[in-house]
Structure formats: structure tokens, C-alpha cells
Image (cartoon, rainbow, N blue to C red):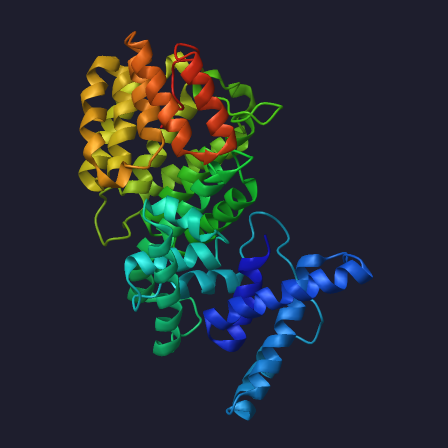
Length: 415
């Protein structure tokens, strides 16, 4: 939970994100040793940050350029032992923002930027990042290693850029914040469907980016999307932790404050003079996805959802940012607007997509469509296959239940 802030603080001192990550891990080892003996401090995050900072300063002192570096560190570091912590979920830590833009530097490939940022800022494991990009874990591990070396070799400044440089990095930054949120919203593996801490971190970063770049439509679009998605979190699981599909969710549990914040951010996205790619008023992928989420938020019940509009928005999204996952979501919307028979050919066409070969939601959606068409045995097989592919225990239990009774709740979670 504290890793991003610790790594960011240390990176400001040592100017090397790879070394910063190692020092942060050293601080954790020190905590495991000392807290067992002395007890957990009142502010464990501040203790970890202070310990890592002290180790970073010691490292700087040992470097050949010790005198110059130490003078620079001395000017920038406060004298107190503990760093102040953000006062609320809406605050953004300046060092974390610097780390976010540093790991999204153009010296790295787009894939490397996203992988490294998810690792250092999002705190995701290699397998979780691999799932987000639908690639092997070994590929992600290699990207992260090469990215750290490239940043160190290039001597990338640890700072929030300005002007054209900031705009050039924004697309990667937004993508990474979005992927961090998604991992919190639907965890790759483990016993819980949700990881709320990741959602909160991503939402805080999205709000900070929107405030930092008020003229960028997509910054507001991402903030709107995350506000609206986060509004459903309490309703997505039951008291026992089991997933609750969109059709069965108690919409009274949706957070209306977050919904209103999402509407406001979406209005700013529609009214902003720029997108992240440059001038004009063309709506970007995040603003379109936020508009889809707003359609769900406006519906008083699942049955009143405007699926025709949602399907049309997904069609526009496919034109702007085509991907097999977007097409799968479009298929869900088409199935609700026009019936499962209209959507099944769309899903069947995606079966040949290599990126979806191990993606459990493809057979899950297909199973739902088959169940609604009365093709029960085929639906059972699809749900069983989806259960084998997912690594999240809550989702596996749900899908195995659908495999036994495919007609039970035969509506998948909404896009």
C-alpha cells in the first residue's frame, strides 16, 4: 500500500527508480525485523518512508560525487524524521506524480512504460501486469528490467514535465492509471474480487491529473470513468464476498456522491478544448467509456438501461481505439439491445484472437449468450472453461455455479 510513495520519495534522492525499488524493499525487511521486536509504530507508512530515505542518503554519501549530491539532498530534505502523509483520498502526493511521469518517459517503449509504472506506482505483481496486457509473465519481467536500465542510462530527470513534453507523456500516464484501477476493480488472482486500495490510488491519481491539466479532455474523461465505476464498488459483492452481477446489484448502494462527481468530470471532458492527442473537440476513448458508465448510472434499474445507446458508444470506441476486449464489450451491449442471436457471431469471430486465448471473459460471455438461446449443454461447457481460465477464486466459484445451472442469473456483468 505504501510502496509507490516510498519508491517515489527515494527516487527523488537517488535519481534511479531501480535502486529506489531496492531500497524500498530493504526498508520493508527492516520493518519485519524491528516491528516484531519493538511493535508496529503509530504511523507505519511514515516509518517506512523515513527508513528508506535514510538509507538513500547513506547511499548518496557513498557515491564518488558525494559532496555535490549531498549538498543537493540537504537543500531538498526536511529535518523531521517522518514525511507528512496526504490528508485525504483526494490529495495527490507530488513525489508519486513525479514518479508516474518519470516511468512514462518517451525513452521507453509504450509497453515498457506501462509495465514499469504498474510495477512501481501501482504495486502490481508481474503476473497481474501480464494479465492486464494479455501477454506472458516472462515478457513483462523482461520489459520491467530493460526499462529500469534504460531510465538509468538516459539519466532521466525525476520531475513532472511541462508543455509539449507533458502532453506527449499523458497518453501513457492515463493508460497506466486506468489499468491500476482495473486491477482493483476485478483482481487477477486471490480470494477477493476487489482490491479497493488500488481503486482509491488510481482515483486519487486521476483526480490529480485532471487538476494538473484542466484543458485536457481525456484527463477529465478518465477521472469521470473512474468516479462512475468506483460508485458501484460496494454493490459488486455480497456480505460473503461473492460477486454480484450488474443485473442483481442493489443500486441504492451505488455511491451517489461519486456518481455526481463522475457526471461533473464528464461535463468537463465534453467541454475541454483539447484531447490528449492534440487540438479539436474529438472525444477520446476515456470520455466515451465514461459516457457508457454514465448510461448505467442514469438507469434506475437494469431493465431501464439504454443498451442501444451503449452499443452505439462501443461502436464509436471501436473506431477510435479498436481492441478485442472493446469488441467483446460491444457484443454484450448488442446482446441486450438486439438479443443474443445478434451478438453470438461477434463473439464467435473473437475466438481466433490470440490475445483472448486465455481470457476467461470470452467463454463467460459466450456461455451467457448460449444459455439465453436455450443451448444449455454448450453453455455449461463454456462456463466450465471460463472457470478453468480465471485465477480469481470468487470468479471461479461464480462460473462453476453457472456451469451447473447456466440459466440461473443468465446475464453477465455489464460492460
